[in-house]
Length: 363
Image (cartoon, rainbow, N blue to C red; front, top):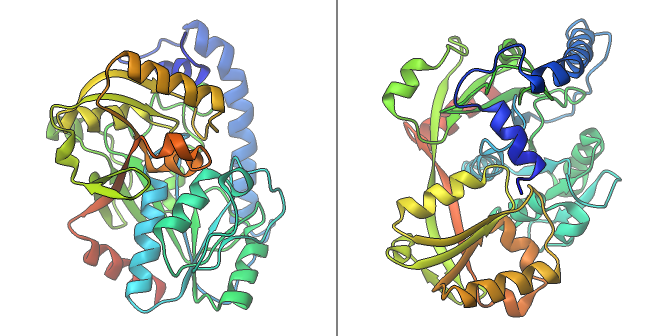
């Protein structure tokens, strides 16, 4: 049985156009009109200064998108924060902490030296970011103004990197980095819930840098609508870095998946991309499970995966790094699975991207 998210994806990113009389659109369009009107009013109030933004005493960089789902915001946040640190800055990362049970702001996930909160408390993505950004504080909370002030006062941050914050307009930002899926930037072109758009494409006028993520064939690029021609545009491709086996005790190259009989599972926004990566590396996928994004695994899930993988004679059970941070509590299971680490490879290159970003901060 298809999950709700999978069903929505089939309408949001259809193989062919949906007619205006399609039952899904007839049902959802009234909600989309209401949502669009609220977003338009909110943006106008900010644009006219009626709703005031809070400006903190250090530069702020937002990383976000205009669609629901994954476009690579988390790996882009990691790349940006680590890159700024390598350039001599003292960044801190601020996340809303989606999926975590803490509802206050200013929660310190990591002080830069050790992790202080679990995925259940802070959310899976902030914990993943903390693990991938050594020496960089990571904080969560719905009010990023509060988290930002704490990062400056307590940790001496001189630049703040906001994860998934393009729509969070209350905190003034100096640079907006917006990510677009290379193959399907706007889906069916409709606003939530009839389509995947959080905002209409016209909102890209607020962007300072555009990054098209994923891998697209040249003919698909030619078919894409123009998005914005007055800001720097980069491309970023997902690149498998390594696979980690047995609780970090054994690190193997991605090529180790070649010819292996694989049982794969994940709970991310775009599970099809993870599966495609496994196939491109030559893995023979005997079973693949897609859980909802931000899914927190239960003992029953672990037992079911273990039993089924054994029954199917899978040589490896593999998942993503984002899933891995939530599976550490099942230590015996974690010891038996393989975690794939990925990063974004910038085009033309990371140095050019960081130079562009730093120049924008100096304006």
